[in-house]
Image (cartoon, rainbow, N blue to C red; front, side, top):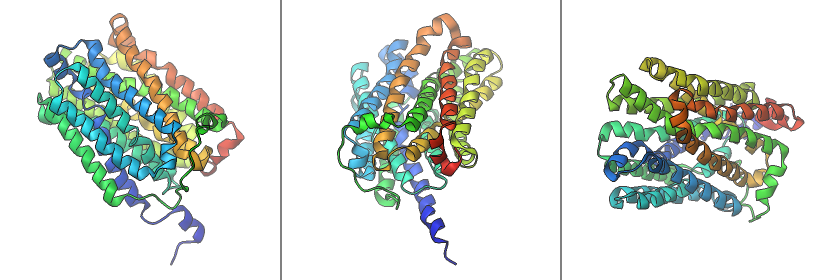
Length: 410
């Protein structure tokens, strides 16, 4: 018996196959993000880097991504160009930039340039991927984007697992990440297409950059996202460093800290999927607010566990790892539901660009205050972000246009 017409319109065949393959491709592509950060201790020793210089291995990727997404938003690239081609081309270029660091770089100057270029290229992998997936899902869009962002999260944790395999051979670790990204591009080439809900290619309109935030619903969803981003990348960047220090205090080997870092960041993948399921049923504003409340509490609690049992430290870090990114996809889903569908890619890219710009401040905030506050209190500086994000999402929940979110589930 055929499905009713209305149901078929919301459930195109093959959408979960595309979800699985695109998520796998994005997982492979995002292995580039922390590929250099994961080997930072080795680079510090080999190149004589200071702690501040090593921080720039992450900050340069963030700044490159901000530059890439801002250029993409201003030029409306995900809406004017086919997002699938954008993902393929950007993946290939990002893999080349990362491999160049492994093959040719022998000092921080060239490394920082190549990390910037890697981040710039990743701007063409992440937001366009979300647009492709939205073209396959109207019903259960929160779950779909949750799975995708969960895959991205797991991809960003992969370099720490690769480190366990290659140990001190950091160049091989970087080449492995580039190889995975190439594999992701191949998956998109042969198995991923845009879905039946994809809008027609848009005309270039530079004014869309300002029109995006004229929409109050999109503006509040973005404010929630900004609060979330204040916390997220600072946590992802510095919790592995805290784990290395905490585990060393208890006499555990370095490999244990690398495996723990992979586990903690990887817990975010489960958090994204569970939050996507809950958001489609209970509402996006409610689920994002709950996730930010939990992650904000972890900002304060995690430091109290430092120096004690490594198992307690790991348990709290794992909860934080799950909660800190669980809400991420739901902000993007809300923007796709509240904004102009023709310029969906521009809205997603601009939201992402500004959020990542904010991360450059919070990532640098932690080492600036670490000498004074220590690991015990330094992460509490991240708590205001999710607190303000909760306020924004509860305000959005009270608006009439929130009825457009998650098919009326706010």
